[in-house]
Image 1: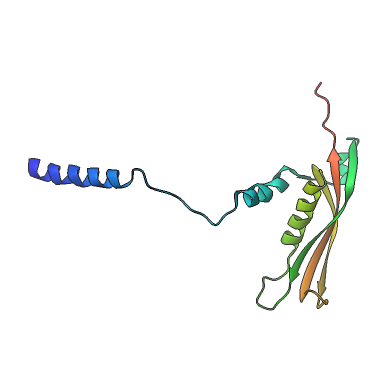
Image 2 (image 1 turned 45 degrees about the vertical axis):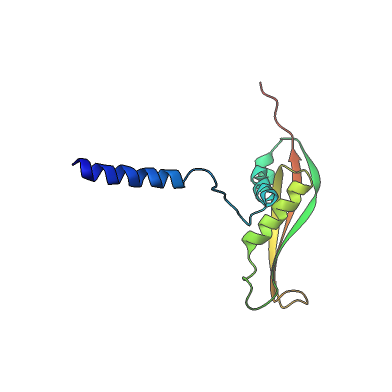
Length: 130
C-alpha cells in the first residue's frame, strides 16, 4: 500500500506546484466596456401610468438604432435598438425610460433593414421615506 500512496502524493504535489505562481490571465475584454455594458441595468423601464404622481424631470428624447448593413450581418432587431436607447438615456443622466414606439424600415441608404426605438429619458425623483 505504501508504494501506491507515494506515487499518488508525488503526482498530487507536482500538480499543485504547477498551479502556483506564474499563472496569468489575459482577456480581450476591456474593463471599461463591461462597465458601459452594465450601465443600462440601473435604468427602470416604466410607463407614464406607472409613474402616476411621482415627480420626474425629462432629460430628453432618445432614439435607439439597430442596423443591418450587409447581408451577412445580424438582422436588425428591437432588442438591440431598445438597448441603444437605454444607453443613450443613461448618458443623459436618466434613471428611467418610457418607450413610445419602435419602427422597422427596409432598404434605406445606410441599412438593408433597421429598427429604431423612440423613448423619453427621465429622471424620476426618489420618494421621501416616511
